[in-house]
Image 1: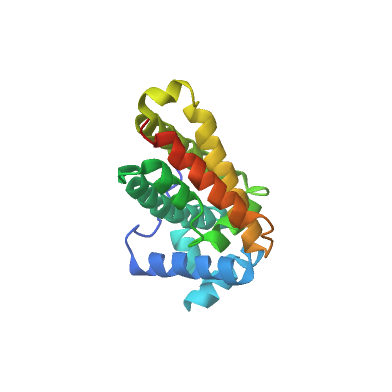
Image 2: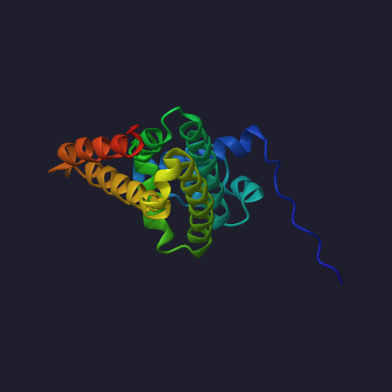
Length: 192
């Protein structure tokens, strides 16, 4: 006997979007541990069964919220890549704190949720490839002396560190580091 496929609500439904908005708000304001189906449903003014209609599991819900945030990040990365000064734009993209609280929640949650870890890893890999290609173009002939993969990792790691530490109120040496690093980046693309 064949099992009927489970129906899932439409991707562009206003209800689905309200659920995603509610889950994101709960994660940012109360932490990912509180982003249960019941809590999200209450926040959206819906019944938990309706949340499950759109997202069969809580992991499905969290991954959908992450993918929406990743789409936003990809749009911002595309703007940085198109900037006339792509290295500086990549740096500004990396240190942007617009979605810092949500990003920190995703990182903490990914430690415990394999589905989310996989989604983050996939997006990070795709983004890193674009960033490396952009750095190669920005450096031109200087790319052979300044490994673009290492530079991409440096930009990402340093930016992430500054953002996360600032998010918890730590910031000793951040301004000096930011100023020095920005000067160094500008020097990489300066005409001789």
